[in-house]
Each structure stands twice: as C-alpha cells, then as structure tokens.
Length: 444
Image (cartoon, rainbow, N blue to C red; front, top):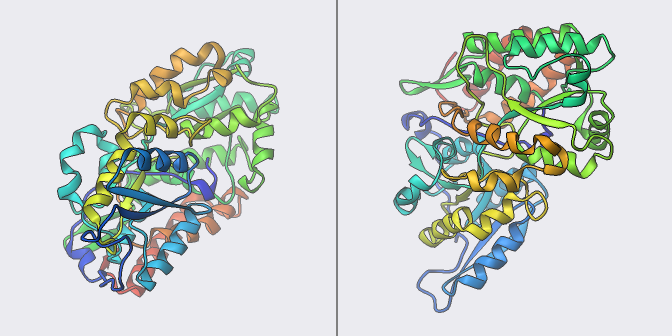
C-alpha cells in the first residue's frame, strides 16, 4: 500500500503507566534551546522531513518576536529515528521533532519526550479525536497532531465501467471485482513485498489488538479474531493472483503501472494522490474515490493510518523551553496559513489537517486533475472517512523492531512461500521473546 520510507500513521489508546515505568530513562545533558531566562527571543531547534515545513517555519518566525524556530531538514522518517536516538544519548536533542504516532510509545518509554498536557490540553477541541489520541500515552500528551488519516479506495472508473463493475463497498466486493479484472489481465491492487502495512491496517479495521495492556504487563496477540479476519481477505487476494507485486523501491514503476491500467485500485490517503498527479500522463480524470471497504455486515470503520497521517510535532524532555515549544507546535497545526501550506500537494505534503473542522481543507488535499468529474463526490468520501477512524489501536514499545521482522516474513507471504497465518504465528512468538529480551513485562 505505502512506501516504507514514507509510512504514516496512527492513533493509539492510552496505555497503563506501570508497564512503561521500568523502561523510563533519565535523559541528562544540557538540553536544547536557549534558557528561558536569557535575553532576547527563545530559539527552538525543530527537526522535520516534510515538504512545506521550511515555509511554515519562516511564517512563524515572521509573526513571533519572543520565540524563533531553527529548522533542520532530516532525510526521512526512518532517518529521524536514528538521528533522534543519537541526539538523546548525547544530551542535545532538538526541542521539536516531526514524527508519527507509531513511535510515540517507544520514545516515551525511553524517557525522551516531555509531558506537555498542561500546555496543550486547552486546545484539544480544535483537533479530531483520532488525531488527538495519537499524541497520547497513559492519557498524557506528548505532542501536537499535525495531520489526520482519511482512508479510502481510489479506482479507475473507465476500467470498472468497461467490465461492468461498481465501486466495492465491502471486502467481499473488492475480491469479487479482482476476479473479474483478472480475466482481462488487470490486477486488483499492489502488494509490495517489503510493506506489510496492508496486514496492519486491515487488522486494525477488523478490531485487532496486536499490543495491549493487561495489568502491569504488555499483552501480545497477533492471532486474535480481527487479525485472522483480515488475514483471510489478504490470503484470498494472494491465492487468486489478484495483486501486483511491485516494490516501492522503484516508485516510478509503480506509478506507471497504475497509469497504464495494469492495476486498477489502491487503498490510500490524500498524500499519495500527490505522487499520482506528479507521475501520471495518461489516466488523469479517470479516477474516483469510494469509501474504504467494510467487512460484510459491519459499520464503516477506517484504519487510523495508511499514510504520513497520524503525524505529530513532539516536544522533547531535554528542551529547556517546553511551554514555548508546545505553543509553537500548536501554532503550526492550527494557523490557517500554515495548515493550508502543508495540506497542499504543491506547497506541502498533501496531508489532511488534524483539525476537528477540516472540511474547508479537503479541496487543498485532493486533485481535480486526477479525479476530473469525480472531484466533488470525492470531497464527501474524504470528509466522511475522518468520522470513522479507529481510535483504540496501541503501538507497542518495540514497534520498529517488530515491523522490521514482519517485513521479512511478508515478502515470503507475497511470494507464496508461506501463508499469512504462518507469518502471524511467527510474529506472536518473536514479539513476546523480543519484549522479554528488553526486560519488558509481557504476556503472550
């Protein structure tokens, strides 16, 4: 579904503090940012990787006398984790960092983030519930949401019309459409062998909980009913050869395949549409949006992250000016000009804002060039999806390591060397062992 280096996402449930207590570390060092008692404006180092941030920082600095941001652009999301790790160890972490919700529990457990609840709680109502949940651990807030996670299907209207297909309302419909398309040499969707996020988001939608808290310990369950339900859908697509297997390592090739009609659908969010617009030459105007498919008989529910959404501006514990950092983060997520800059696929990252009232920004985040006559109906699909986002998903303290291990197994699944259920059984055993090796209390 998505590029690994630009993965997204998510919301989280509050987790019990005692399960994290043993992992907290004291972060020493002089910290970053100037002492709040010094004369002149406070300077706050800010690390990020998203397009548009430099323009937002420039606008912030122009409108603030007492607080200034010093921006450093990091290569990408994964590079950020490595550089932040080194900075925390050295005691010179920046005050503000762009990140995604999947990493927050890990950083909190390492004592790297500041609890900024008292500074930002008054602004809670400005954000939608799914985005706000992603900034929390144990009910405490460690950052300000920057983007939301609308999730939907985008499909080729000309291809669907040619073969008498309707937009798939359920996963059963989705698979059935794929079987029709297969007869005509067209793939339903693309599963990159390095990206198991497909399994993650379908499991999330189906009510799975890979990580949860049971008393004072983490509970791991990669084989619950929701995960098995998701696995069944994915396995049917793979078994019937309904999916392309194009790696996102050659992103241009993936885009050409969609543009040329080799693959007819994607489950995506708004930011991926920017890449389609930039790369397509043949199929612009032939795409439409439909709601994320439901499981048969269930109400609409969308996963809390298939993209860079679930984005946050986090405040580090080493920052000496945490209140000012929190204020700056709030401004970047709520100032109309800043939000528009980031929402646009031209000036920013094409992401949906995390704001509770974000309808006015939908037009900024989707493309009339790509959608043509389907542009207006698409606006409602995006808006509606924000009201069905999962808010009870929890990211475990070893999420990055777990996901890396899952990548290896996912490649075997895509190549039909093993079943999805085989991968899940392995991840159950591996994750329990990994948490225990880290000294983390766990039940599996």
